[in-house]
Length: 394
Image 1 (cartoon, rainbow, N blue to C red):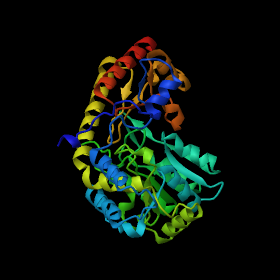
Image 2 (image 1 turned 90 degrees about the vertical axis):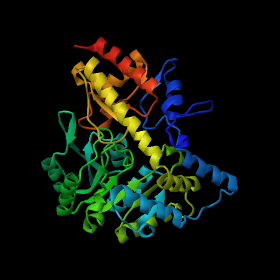
Image 3 (image 1 turned 120 degrees about the vertical axis):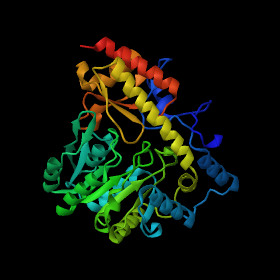
Image 4 (image 1 turned 60 degrees about the horizontal axis):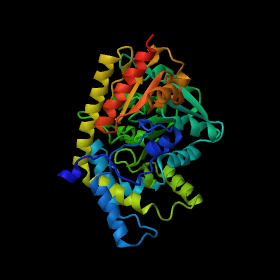
C-alpha cells in the first residue's frame, strides 16, 4: 500500500533542529545536514492518522492509559523479541528516554556513585552522569576490522571497581552494533556477579537491518530482568521525538514501585502525553510494513556509503552495522586534529555531521553520518566528503 511506503518530509513550515536550526547557525544556501539523530522521513501514516483522530475527537485533557496501549507493547515485544511481559504490571511512561534514565539513576544510585558505560556512546550518557553528581566509568569498545567488540576483561574491572549501574545501549549508538544473545549473557553474568544493576537504553531496537534480530538483555531470564530496567520510545524508529513520550519495562516490583513514586514526586504520574500514547499504539500495531520498507532503504544506503568510501576514500572506512541509521566513519588517517574535524567539514564542504570526539573514549577521529535522508542528499553528501578527503589526504 502506498500509504505505508516511507516518504521524505517536505513543504513549508518545517522547523527542525536537524535542518532549519543548522541553516540558521551556518548561513550557507547549500548546507546539507546529517547530524541530529532524526529522520528526514515523514512519520508513518497510521501514526499520523491516530494523531488526527485524537484531534478530531476534540478533547485534549488528561488521558487514561487504556488496555489497547499496554496490549500493543505486549504484542510488539513478543513479536519482535520473543519476550513476554505483563505490561500492565511493569510498563510505565515518561516524557522522554533521558528523563526516564535520570529517574532510574536517582533510584539506583546516589551522588558520587559510579556508572559504567561502553564508549564511544551518545554524549548524553556521560553528560547526564556528570551533571547529576555521579562518576562515569568508560569502558572503550574494541575495534576489530570493521566492527566493534566488548572487552569483557576491561568491563569486569570497571564493574568490580564499585559501579552501581551498567548503562547499556542496545543497539549501540553510534557504532550500530546490536549485541548478540551471547554477548548480553556475558554482560549479565558480570553484572550479577558484582551486584550491578543494568539500565538498558533500547531506543534504536526497531531499526534492525534485514536479517538481524534484537534481543533485550532483560529477556535472558527472570533473574536478569529483576536487575534490569529497559527503556523504549517510538521516537527514533517512527520519527516521533517531538511528542516527548517514552516508557520503561521494569519487572522488579520494588524498582517499578520506586519509579512510580519518582513520577509522583514530579507530578508526572497523572495524565501522560495523549499524542504519545496514540502514536505508540498505532506504531506497534500497524506499522510493520512501513518499517520493513524503511529498513530496506537504510540498509541500501549503508551499503552505498560503505562502497563509495571504499572506492573513492580508501584511507577512510565505514564500520559494519546491525541496526540504526548511522554510518560510523573512521577518518583518523587524514591526520586532522579530532576536535576540529566536524567544524572543518562544515566550513569547507557545507555538511553537518556528528563529531565522534564528543562521544567518549574511542570516538576521536570518527564522524557519525545520518543516513535517514533522501537518496539525492545522501549522494551529494558522499561526494562532498570525497572532496574533503581529497583535500586533506596525507
